Length: 105
Image 1: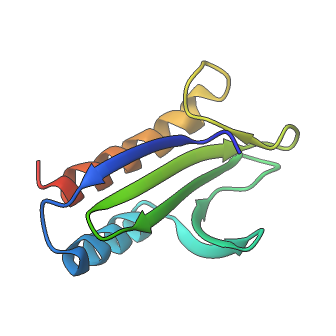
Image 2: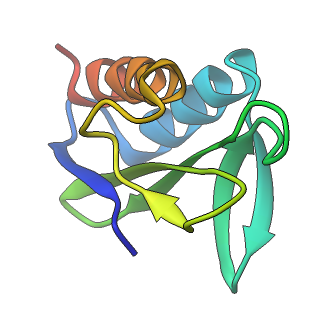
């Protein structure tokens, strides 16, 4: 599972982080779905635009954001590199918003 992972310390309460994260993800067009036994936020279509995916794991002292894209062939792709740059940029933008809100910076 090649994913781009960001670990964030809370700059607000866990409840506030969860509330804000859901709001950002929904405003950016993501919806929550179960894939391969895990709950993730996804956006897009594998055939047309490629799937954008973000997973948010809440822990006692931090939040772990995982982001990746998935195309028609090849499975998960991390957010580095130039292949799928426009789609990757979209996921990075949303992850940046999440990081800012959760960390309080």
